[in-house]
Length: 382
Image (cartoon, rainbow, N blue to C red):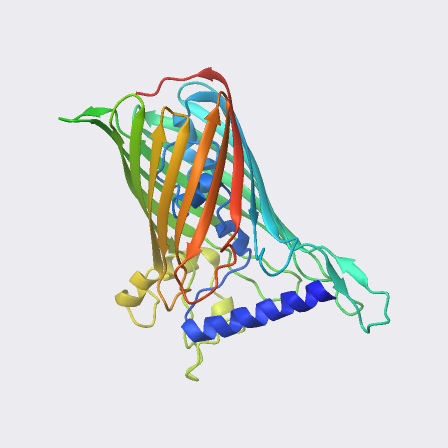
């Protein structure tokens, strides 16, 4: 009962916070897909579409796998959620990639978001029953080099959301849908400058492009978080032991903006029939020009992040980053820091988040960690 009460209060508090920052916050189903699943990206401001290749690339940009330097990689990560308020909520992830040859690779991954155990009772004397709401995604991707410096990838994703609770009057059915990703990654050859060598990186990923999700036949359909990410980075290769990389990333949520569909002066769009009639594909195109305040509001719907990573002898990594979102579109603003330690084929990454927003961040004051194993023969990517 205590966990349930806390959860209800958190949901209510979230609505109050949303009202304080504005009523044009775009909400979707299965928001766990936007949670950073690995500590490396988390340490650099939650970015990864244009960073160097790693075993966590499935979430950010699967096209990077074609540039992997080892035959295969396995990664596992854990992100605690609302740790300072209630226990048992968190995101677990695991991924695996395998290079078929020097030009191509495939990968699979699993993300599992659990809300812990919630006890339901009609009265305090009632025996009650436990429910375990959860969400998951199962992904697969194939990446291919189209040139020595550019690769593309396609991915498929099964999404399942089991959040509706079974009652005597409601036949709860988990919501599910399928989505695809289309991604590209550019990595230049190493360039010799006057005092250092360097390498350019760029990437994009259209992720979660798929149908809406519903929890029963008569319920409303909900958009999933389709995203367009693109970024640019550069590695300063100071010498064989020291590399300093900088990366920037931008993200646009490809979901229609809340509007006053019925002319009543309010942006209550969730139960609006006109909003419900928008298909997921038409919603993608509408998202580029449907903001009520025009282009200026469209720009506010983009988040941006900056990240840096210093690597010493390919064994020690130190990271930092900053993430920014408009005050009227969610108000997420925070600094991050992190570190990585590699020993032979294993690597451990840690990250920590410092919120600079007036709105509490659910991952604030939580230590995220992930572990990677890079195995098999080495591939040389110039």
